[in-house]
Length: 102
Image (cartoon, rainbow, N blue to C red):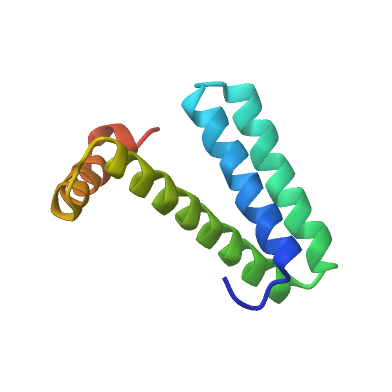
């Protein structure tokens, strides 16, 4: 997640972790609040520059991938999954109808 200060990178990681926690808790109010917080933080940090906002939101998405990757790796080692089993489980989850919501 280059081109960010360590502080900004850590804030993005924490923000996504908060969003993931709200989703796991199935708490729509907390989820919406966390999404609003994330967007407000990135808008404020971009100082009205649309290109900076787009770049920061891309980095925020990347932070989400870093958190998801870390969680998956920790869970796979805890449950004794091989790399191939982890990739298969991930592929099944991504192709699941549950992933797409109206």
